[in-house]
Structure formats: structure tokens, C-alpha cells
Length: 62
Figure 1: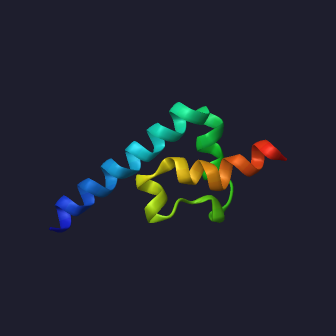
Figure 2: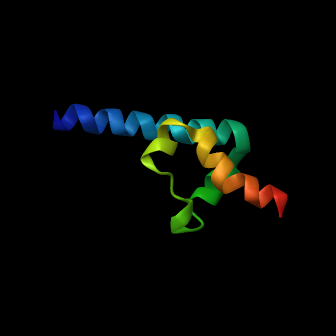
């Protein structure tokens, strides 16, 4: 249970980062770490498009 869950957690995190990098490049990854409110929710980890809509879209519009 514990180790298998941790492996799944790492895989989900990697998939999230790959999706952000593919869509927004390194600047998207940097934005993730610029403020604590930029961290993804559990839902956003499995739906990176939702994170990008919440965090990156306001940056593009401003």
C-alpha cells in the first residue's frame, strides 16, 4: 500500500510537470514555484489544464 501509493504519486507528479513543460515550457515550471498559491491542487495534478487555466491564464491576460 504505502510504497505503491508513493510510486503512483511520483508518476502523477511527473506527468503533471511534463504536461506543463509541453504546454508552457520552462517558464510554466518556474511559475509553479514562484508562490505557494501556485502549487497544484490534487485535482489539478491529474488535470494540468485546470492548473494552467487558474495560474497561467491570468498571467497572460495581464
